[in-house]
Image (cartoon, rainbow, N blue to C red; front, side, top):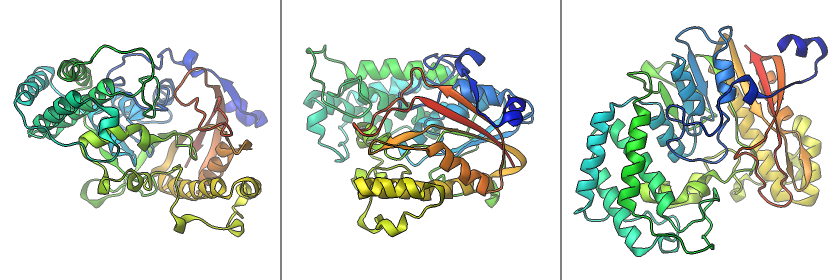
Length: 412
Protein backbone atom coordinates (compact mmCIF):
# COMPACT_ATOMS: atom_id res chain seq x y z
CA UNK A 1 0.00 0.00 0.00
CA UNK A 2 2.77 2.41 0.89
CA UNK A 3 4.53 1.56 -2.36
CA UNK A 4 1.40 2.40 -4.37
CA UNK A 5 1.04 5.70 -2.54
CA UNK A 6 4.70 6.69 -2.92
CA UNK A 7 4.67 5.86 -6.62
CA UNK A 8 1.94 8.36 -7.54
CA UNK A 9 1.14 10.36 -4.38
CA UNK A 10 -2.55 9.44 -4.52
CA UNK A 11 -4.51 8.05 -1.55
CA UNK A 12 -5.02 4.29 -1.74
CA UNK A 13 -8.63 3.16 -1.38
CA UNK A 14 -9.13 0.38 1.16
CA UNK A 15 -11.92 -1.37 3.05
CA UNK A 16 -10.75 -2.18 6.57
CA UNK A 17 -13.82 -4.36 7.12
CA UNK A 18 -12.52 -6.70 4.41
CA UNK A 19 -8.87 -6.39 5.38
CA UNK A 20 -9.69 -7.35 8.98
CA UNK A 21 -12.81 -9.47 9.49
CA UNK A 22 -13.99 -8.03 12.81
CA UNK A 23 -17.31 -6.19 12.83
CA UNK A 24 -17.86 -2.98 14.79
CA UNK A 25 -20.57 -4.70 16.83
CA UNK A 26 -18.62 -7.88 17.58
CA UNK A 27 -18.49 -8.84 21.27
CA UNK A 28 -14.70 -9.04 21.18
CA UNK A 29 -13.01 -9.07 24.58
CA UNK A 30 -14.11 -5.90 26.43
CA UNK A 31 -15.19 -3.71 23.50
CA UNK A 32 -18.92 -3.88 24.30
CA UNK A 33 -18.69 -3.00 27.99
CA UNK A 34 -20.32 0.39 27.45
CA UNK A 35 -21.86 2.32 24.56
CA UNK A 36 -20.22 5.58 23.46
CA UNK A 37 -20.66 7.87 20.43
CA UNK A 38 -18.28 7.72 17.45
CA UNK A 39 -16.21 4.75 18.53
CA UNK A 40 -13.28 3.93 16.28
CA UNK A 41 -13.83 0.86 14.11
CA UNK A 42 -11.61 -1.83 15.76
CA UNK A 43 -10.58 -3.18 12.34
CA UNK A 44 -8.33 -0.14 11.86
CA UNK A 45 -6.11 -0.49 14.95
CA UNK A 46 -6.03 -4.29 14.54
CA UNK A 47 -4.67 -3.86 11.00
CA UNK A 48 -1.80 -1.60 12.06
CA UNK A 49 -1.03 -3.29 15.39
CA UNK A 50 -0.61 -6.62 13.61
CA UNK A 51 1.99 -5.10 11.28
CA UNK A 52 5.30 -6.21 12.81
CA UNK A 53 7.27 -3.45 11.08
CA UNK A 54 5.33 -0.80 13.03
CA UNK A 55 5.50 -2.22 16.55
CA UNK A 56 8.18 -4.42 18.13
CA UNK A 57 7.14 -7.27 20.44
CA UNK A 58 6.05 -5.92 23.84
CA UNK A 59 6.06 -2.40 22.45
CA UNK A 60 4.22 0.66 23.73
CA UNK A 61 1.09 1.94 21.97
CA UNK A 62 -0.44 5.34 22.74
CA UNK A 63 -3.75 6.92 21.78
CA UNK A 64 -3.97 10.61 22.78
CA UNK A 65 -7.72 10.64 22.01
CA UNK A 66 -8.46 7.19 23.37
CA UNK A 67 -12.19 7.60 24.10
CA UNK A 68 -13.29 4.37 25.74
CA UNK A 69 -10.15 2.50 24.70
CA UNK A 70 -10.65 0.70 21.39
CA UNK A 71 -6.97 1.09 20.45
CA UNK A 72 -5.86 0.24 23.99
CA UNK A 73 -7.83 -3.01 24.12
CA UNK A 74 -6.42 -4.16 20.79
CA UNK A 75 -2.92 -3.24 21.92
CA UNK A 76 -3.28 -5.38 25.05
CA UNK A 77 -4.70 -8.32 23.09
CA UNK A 78 -1.60 -8.17 20.88
CA UNK A 79 0.73 -8.24 23.90
CA UNK A 80 1.72 -4.58 24.07
CA UNK A 81 1.80 -1.96 26.80
CA UNK A 82 -0.86 0.70 26.26
CA UNK A 83 -1.43 4.32 27.24
CA UNK A 84 -4.15 6.82 26.42
CA UNK A 85 -5.64 10.23 27.16
CA UNK A 86 -9.14 11.65 27.05
CA UNK A 87 -10.76 14.79 28.46
CA UNK A 88 -14.05 13.07 29.36
CA UNK A 89 -13.84 11.43 32.82
CA UNK A 90 -16.51 8.91 31.83
CA UNK A 91 -14.45 7.84 28.81
CA UNK A 92 -11.37 7.46 31.02
CA UNK A 93 -13.34 5.37 33.51
CA UNK A 94 -14.61 3.06 30.76
CA UNK A 95 -11.16 2.81 29.12
CA UNK A 96 -9.64 1.88 32.47
CA UNK A 97 -12.19 -0.86 33.07
CA UNK A 98 -11.84 -2.20 29.53
CA UNK A 99 -8.07 -2.56 29.90
CA UNK A 100 -7.88 -4.10 33.40
CA UNK A 101 -7.99 -7.86 33.89
CA UNK A 102 -10.18 -9.07 36.75
CA UNK A 103 -10.93 -12.58 37.98
CA UNK A 104 -14.53 -13.42 37.07
CA UNK A 105 -15.40 -15.21 40.28
CA UNK A 106 -14.19 -12.49 42.64
CA UNK A 107 -15.77 -9.74 40.56
CA UNK A 108 -19.10 -11.57 40.39
CA UNK A 109 -19.07 -11.90 44.18
CA UNK A 110 -18.55 -8.13 44.46
CA UNK A 111 -21.49 -7.52 42.12
CA UNK A 112 -23.82 -9.68 44.21
CA UNK A 113 -22.65 -8.08 47.46
CA UNK A 114 -23.19 -4.62 45.96
CA UNK A 115 -26.77 -5.46 45.05
CA UNK A 116 -27.37 -6.90 48.53
CA UNK A 117 -26.01 -3.73 50.18
CA UNK A 118 -27.99 -1.51 47.84
CA UNK A 119 -31.27 -3.02 49.01
CA UNK A 120 -30.94 -1.30 52.41
CA UNK A 121 -28.62 1.59 51.52
CA UNK A 122 -29.51 5.25 51.92
CA UNK A 123 -29.72 6.68 48.37
CA UNK A 124 -26.95 9.02 47.18
CA UNK A 125 -28.06 12.16 45.37
CA UNK A 126 -27.67 12.83 41.65
CA UNK A 127 -25.09 15.54 40.97
CA UNK A 128 -27.22 18.43 39.67
CA UNK A 129 -25.75 18.73 36.17
CA UNK A 130 -29.17 18.34 34.52
CA UNK A 131 -32.76 18.10 35.80
CA UNK A 132 -32.90 14.60 37.27
CA UNK A 133 -36.71 14.60 37.40
CA UNK A 134 -36.84 15.08 33.65
CA UNK A 135 -34.82 11.97 32.95
CA UNK A 136 -35.70 9.49 35.72
CA UNK A 137 -38.83 8.34 37.50
CA UNK A 138 -38.95 8.83 41.27
CA UNK A 139 -38.62 5.06 41.78
CA UNK A 140 -35.59 4.82 39.49
CA UNK A 141 -33.94 7.73 41.31
CA UNK A 142 -34.21 5.92 44.64
CA UNK A 143 -32.83 2.63 43.31
CA UNK A 144 -30.00 4.26 41.34
CA UNK A 145 -29.11 6.27 44.44
CA UNK A 146 -29.00 3.07 46.49
CA UNK A 147 -26.73 1.38 43.93
CA UNK A 148 -24.40 4.37 43.91
CA UNK A 149 -24.17 4.33 47.73
CA UNK A 150 -23.33 0.61 47.71
CA UNK A 151 -20.72 1.04 44.97
CA UNK A 152 -18.98 3.74 47.00
CA UNK A 153 -18.28 1.09 49.67
CA UNK A 154 -16.15 -1.03 47.31
CA UNK A 155 -12.53 -0.81 48.47
CA UNK A 156 -10.65 -2.32 45.51
CA UNK A 157 -10.17 0.45 42.87
CA UNK A 158 -10.12 -1.89 39.84
CA UNK A 159 -13.27 -3.72 40.89
CA UNK A 160 -15.00 -0.46 41.75
CA UNK A 161 -14.08 0.94 38.35
CA UNK A 162 -15.64 -1.97 36.48
CA UNK A 163 -18.78 -1.87 38.60
CA UNK A 164 -19.09 1.90 38.10
CA UNK A 165 -19.00 1.29 34.34
CA UNK A 166 -21.84 -1.23 34.67
CA UNK A 167 -23.73 1.29 36.79
CA UNK A 168 -23.25 3.96 34.10
CA UNK A 169 -24.65 1.66 31.42
CA UNK A 170 -27.55 0.85 33.74
CA UNK A 171 -28.29 4.57 34.04
CA UNK A 172 -28.69 4.77 30.26
CA UNK A 173 -31.00 1.74 30.21
CA UNK A 174 -33.40 2.93 32.97
CA UNK A 175 -33.58 6.61 32.00
CA UNK A 176 -36.46 8.25 30.16
CA UNK A 177 -34.13 9.16 27.28
CA UNK A 178 -34.63 7.80 23.76
CA UNK A 179 -32.22 4.81 23.50
CA UNK A 180 -31.71 5.48 19.79
CA UNK A 181 -30.07 8.87 20.41
CA UNK A 182 -26.52 9.39 21.68
CA UNK A 183 -27.38 12.76 23.25
CA UNK A 184 -30.25 12.59 25.82
CA UNK A 185 -33.62 13.32 24.20
CA UNK A 186 -36.88 12.44 25.96
CA UNK A 187 -38.46 9.29 24.57
CA UNK A 188 -41.77 10.02 22.85
CA UNK A 189 -42.68 6.63 21.43
CA UNK A 190 -45.13 4.02 22.70
CA UNK A 191 -45.14 3.38 26.43
CA UNK A 192 -42.24 1.13 27.38
CA UNK A 193 -42.12 -1.66 29.93
CA UNK A 194 -40.62 -0.59 33.26
CA UNK A 195 -36.93 -1.48 33.58
CA UNK A 196 -35.76 -2.77 36.98
CA UNK A 197 -32.50 -0.93 37.88
CA UNK A 198 -31.20 -3.70 40.19
CA UNK A 199 -31.86 -6.51 37.70
CA UNK A 200 -30.45 -4.46 34.82
CA UNK A 201 -27.33 -3.61 36.81
CA UNK A 202 -26.78 -7.26 37.76
CA UNK A 203 -27.09 -8.42 34.14
CA UNK A 204 -24.70 -5.77 32.80
CA UNK A 205 -22.17 -6.09 35.63
CA UNK A 206 -21.93 -9.90 35.37
CA UNK A 207 -21.54 -9.68 31.58
CA UNK A 208 -18.80 -7.07 31.97
CA UNK A 209 -17.04 -9.16 34.62
CA UNK A 210 -16.94 -12.01 32.10
CA UNK A 211 -15.52 -9.65 29.47
CA UNK A 212 -12.79 -8.35 31.80
CA UNK A 213 -11.72 -11.93 32.46
CA UNK A 214 -10.98 -12.43 28.73
CA UNK A 215 -8.09 -9.95 28.81
CA UNK A 216 -4.55 -11.30 29.11
CA UNK A 217 -3.86 -11.93 32.82
CA UNK A 218 -2.41 -8.95 34.71
CA UNK A 219 -3.53 -6.53 31.99
CA UNK A 220 -3.58 -2.91 33.16
CA UNK A 221 -3.20 0.36 31.24
CA UNK A 222 0.27 1.89 31.50
CA UNK A 223 -1.20 5.38 31.71
CA UNK A 224 -4.53 7.10 31.09
CA UNK A 225 -4.32 10.90 31.16
CA UNK A 226 -6.77 13.73 30.63
CA UNK A 227 -5.15 16.08 28.10
CA UNK A 228 -3.94 15.19 24.61
CA UNK A 229 -2.11 18.53 24.45
CA UNK A 230 0.38 17.44 27.10
CA UNK A 231 3.02 14.75 26.68
CA UNK A 232 2.26 12.08 29.30
CA UNK A 233 4.60 11.74 32.25
CA UNK A 234 4.59 8.14 33.39
CA UNK A 235 6.51 6.20 36.05
CA UNK A 236 9.37 7.93 37.90
CA UNK A 237 8.64 11.24 36.16
CA UNK A 238 9.74 9.90 32.77
CA UNK A 239 7.95 11.16 29.63
CA UNK A 240 6.14 8.58 27.54
CA UNK A 241 8.05 7.15 24.57
CA UNK A 242 5.70 5.15 22.35
CA UNK A 243 6.61 2.83 19.51
CA UNK A 244 3.25 3.39 17.82
CA UNK A 245 0.59 6.08 18.14
CA UNK A 246 -2.86 5.33 16.71
CA UNK A 247 -5.54 7.97 17.11
CA UNK A 248 -8.78 9.32 15.71
CA UNK A 249 -9.21 12.91 16.99
CA UNK A 250 -12.58 14.59 17.50
CA UNK A 251 -14.03 17.03 14.99
CA UNK A 252 -14.87 20.67 15.61
CA UNK A 253 -18.34 20.57 17.15
CA UNK A 254 -19.22 17.25 15.50
CA UNK A 255 -20.01 15.21 18.63
CA UNK A 256 -21.38 16.41 21.97
CA UNK A 257 -19.40 13.93 24.07
CA UNK A 258 -20.05 15.61 27.42
CA UNK A 259 -23.74 16.19 26.76
CA UNK A 260 -24.03 12.57 25.62
CA UNK A 261 -22.45 11.48 28.92
CA UNK A 262 -24.41 13.86 31.15
CA UNK A 263 -26.78 11.36 32.78
CA UNK A 264 -23.98 8.96 33.71
CA UNK A 265 -21.70 11.78 34.82
CA UNK A 266 -24.42 13.08 37.13
CA UNK A 267 -25.01 9.73 38.80
CA UNK A 268 -21.29 9.05 39.13
CA UNK A 269 -20.77 12.53 40.60
CA UNK A 270 -17.60 13.30 38.63
CA UNK A 271 -18.35 16.67 37.02
CA UNK A 272 -16.04 19.50 38.22
CA UNK A 273 -18.01 22.27 39.96
CA UNK A 274 -21.15 20.26 39.07
CA UNK A 275 -21.28 22.19 35.79
CA UNK A 276 -21.21 20.47 32.40
CA UNK A 277 -19.89 23.68 30.85
CA UNK A 278 -16.76 23.43 33.03
CA UNK A 279 -16.12 19.92 31.72
CA UNK A 280 -16.92 20.91 28.13
CA UNK A 281 -14.24 23.60 28.36
CA UNK A 282 -11.59 20.89 28.76
CA UNK A 283 -12.55 19.14 25.51
CA UNK A 284 -11.01 19.73 22.10
CA UNK A 285 -13.76 20.18 19.51
CA UNK A 286 -16.24 21.75 21.94
CA UNK A 287 -19.21 23.76 20.70
CA UNK A 288 -19.13 26.50 23.33
CA UNK A 289 -16.42 29.12 23.79
CA UNK A 290 -15.81 31.50 26.66
CA UNK A 291 -15.83 35.18 25.70
CA UNK A 292 -12.06 35.29 26.29
CA UNK A 293 -11.53 32.62 23.61
CA UNK A 294 -13.31 34.54 20.86
CA UNK A 295 -11.42 36.77 18.45
CA UNK A 296 -12.18 38.97 15.46
CA UNK A 297 -11.42 38.10 11.84
CA UNK A 298 -7.84 39.40 12.10
CA UNK A 299 -7.05 36.19 14.03
CA UNK A 300 -8.23 33.93 11.21
CA UNK A 301 -4.88 34.09 9.40
CA UNK A 302 -4.17 30.45 10.24
CA UNK A 303 -1.88 28.97 7.58
CA UNK A 304 -3.64 26.76 5.03
CA UNK A 305 -6.88 27.00 7.04
CA UNK A 306 -6.96 30.81 6.87
CA UNK A 307 -9.12 31.17 3.73
CA UNK A 308 -11.65 28.63 5.05
CA UNK A 309 -11.83 30.36 8.44
CA UNK A 310 -12.43 33.75 6.82
CA UNK A 311 -15.17 32.34 4.58
CA UNK A 312 -16.93 30.85 7.58
CA UNK A 313 -16.48 34.08 9.55
CA UNK A 314 -18.43 35.96 6.88
CA UNK A 315 -21.37 33.63 7.54
CA UNK A 316 -21.04 32.94 11.27
CA UNK A 317 -18.17 34.45 13.32
CA UNK A 318 -18.88 32.16 16.28
CA UNK A 319 -18.50 28.98 14.23
CA UNK A 320 -15.31 30.36 12.72
CA UNK A 321 -13.97 30.93 16.23
CA UNK A 322 -14.95 27.41 17.27
CA UNK A 323 -13.00 26.01 14.31
CA UNK A 324 -10.03 28.33 14.97
CA UNK A 325 -9.76 27.26 18.62
CA UNK A 326 -10.13 23.63 17.59
CA UNK A 327 -7.25 23.93 15.12
CA UNK A 328 -5.06 25.74 17.63
CA UNK A 329 -5.64 23.01 20.21
CA UNK A 330 -5.14 20.23 17.68
CA UNK A 331 -1.82 21.80 16.71
CA UNK A 332 -0.78 21.54 20.37
CA UNK A 333 -2.02 17.95 20.50
CA UNK A 334 -0.04 17.07 17.36
CA UNK A 335 3.13 18.41 18.98
CA UNK A 336 2.55 16.48 22.20
CA UNK A 337 1.79 13.28 20.25
CA UNK A 338 4.90 13.64 18.08
CA UNK A 339 7.00 14.30 21.20
CA UNK A 340 5.58 11.12 22.76
CA UNK A 341 6.82 9.01 19.84
CA UNK A 342 10.23 7.32 19.80
CA UNK A 343 12.61 8.14 16.98
CA UNK A 344 11.83 5.61 14.26
CA UNK A 345 8.35 5.11 15.66
CA UNK A 346 5.14 5.39 13.66
CA UNK A 347 1.92 7.34 14.02
CA UNK A 348 -1.46 6.49 12.48
CA UNK A 349 -3.92 9.37 12.16
CA UNK A 350 -7.57 8.57 11.32
CA UNK A 351 -9.39 11.72 10.22
CA UNK A 352 -12.22 12.72 7.91
CA UNK A 353 -13.37 15.99 6.38
CA UNK A 354 -16.56 17.72 7.41
CA UNK A 355 -18.58 20.89 6.80
CA UNK A 356 -19.10 24.05 8.82
CA UNK A 357 -21.91 26.46 7.84
CA UNK A 358 -22.40 24.41 4.70
CA UNK A 359 -18.78 24.96 3.59
CA UNK A 360 -16.37 22.03 3.13
CA UNK A 361 -13.53 21.97 5.66
CA UNK A 362 -10.45 19.91 4.79
CA UNK A 363 -9.95 18.93 8.41
CA UNK A 364 -7.84 15.88 7.57
CA UNK A 365 -5.37 18.03 5.54
CA UNK A 366 -5.05 20.67 8.22
CA UNK A 367 -4.35 18.10 10.95
CA UNK A 368 -1.98 16.13 8.68
CA UNK A 369 0.02 19.33 8.12
CA UNK A 370 0.38 19.80 11.89
CA UNK A 371 2.09 16.40 12.21
CA UNK A 372 4.37 17.10 9.28
CA UNK A 373 5.25 20.45 10.86
CA UNK A 374 6.48 18.42 13.85
CA UNK A 375 8.98 16.59 11.66
CA UNK A 376 7.01 13.40 10.95
CA UNK A 377 7.34 11.93 7.45
CA UNK A 378 4.17 10.86 5.66
CA UNK A 379 4.64 7.27 4.47
CA UNK A 380 1.18 6.48 3.17
CA UNK A 381 -2.39 7.77 2.89
CA UNK A 382 -5.38 5.42 2.77
CA UNK A 383 -9.05 6.28 2.25
CA UNK A 384 -11.86 4.19 3.68
CA UNK A 385 -15.60 4.76 3.17
CA UNK A 386 -17.72 4.84 6.32
CA UNK A 387 -20.61 2.46 5.77
CA UNK A 388 -22.22 2.33 9.20
CA UNK A 389 -20.77 3.96 12.30
CA UNK A 390 -21.60 6.36 15.08
CA UNK A 391 -19.25 8.82 13.40
CA UNK A 392 -21.75 9.36 10.59
CA UNK A 393 -23.08 12.39 12.37
CA UNK A 394 -24.85 15.57 11.38
CA UNK A 395 -24.48 18.19 14.10
CA UNK A 396 -26.98 20.51 12.46
CA UNK A 397 -28.37 21.13 9.00
CA UNK A 398 -25.20 22.90 7.86
CA UNK A 399 -22.65 20.54 9.44
CA UNK A 400 -22.71 17.80 6.79
CA UNK A 401 -22.12 14.08 7.24
CA UNK A 402 -18.68 12.50 7.45
CA UNK A 403 -18.65 9.66 4.91
CA UNK A 404 -14.92 9.00 4.34
CA UNK A 405 -11.92 8.62 6.58
CA UNK A 406 -8.37 9.42 5.60
CA UNK A 407 -5.80 7.24 7.34
CA UNK A 408 -2.30 8.72 7.39
CA UNK A 409 0.78 6.71 8.35
CA UNK A 410 3.76 8.78 9.53
CA UNK A 411 7.28 7.88 10.64
CA UNK A 412 9.42 9.87 13.06
